[in-house]
Image (cartoon, rainbow, N blue to C red):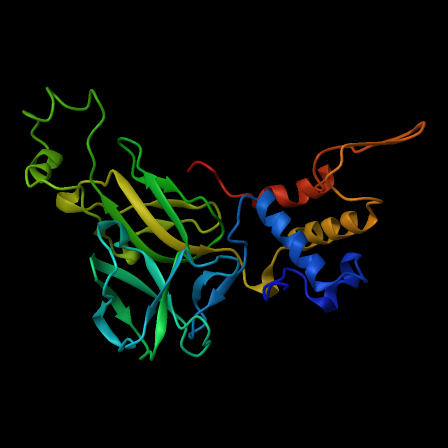
Length: 302
């Protein structure tokens, strides 16, 4: 079945040179384009009930946790999920509620998590029997370089930063006077209490980010010390009406190339008698189409 979030609508097929294309062909070409751009989540975001970016259109939930008893509106809403095993690594994650109901879709931040229970920082709408959909946003967990306060987000343009958390980690060798035992620094004081480093939320209003380049200045945490790592959940890309024309044309080129292939796309060399047919490469994405899509590739390292 074709996706509900294509990059080219049927009314645009002729404009991009694929008048006889089917929705399934455009869907397949879009997936190939997403793969080449290193953006399996795609470049389209889906709005919440208020019209703000909530999650990425081409993402599938990593976990869809049913909540039969419903979820009330309010601050710091506790959701009991017997048998679940949530913990520190879920703090800061964004879950989507009522994904199938456009009038109630919202993205909620998990501010606390223990086995059998999560706390949602803010719930705007009252939800009946629904599900917590995990993994629907982009998540970057990035180290801050020593002595620096900025990170580079892996996807651009930034549409909505949904949560930001930081934590302190162990310093690099050479950054301590004589090891942790005698070091007099913030980490030594925090580490004395034991346990893994805690993720601490920082106000999104305190950051400074360039939505085009993805360069973000991170605010300090405890005692104005800068974090070792930050974890960001966000949406990046465009609404359908604003998808770059180069991406649309790149998808159309893939459809046209697939339709013009005399045999399947996976061959390299075919021989019949004295005739030999050899492909120019092992991919449908030719150099011209790659040039169209290249500016929108995600960054592997930030």
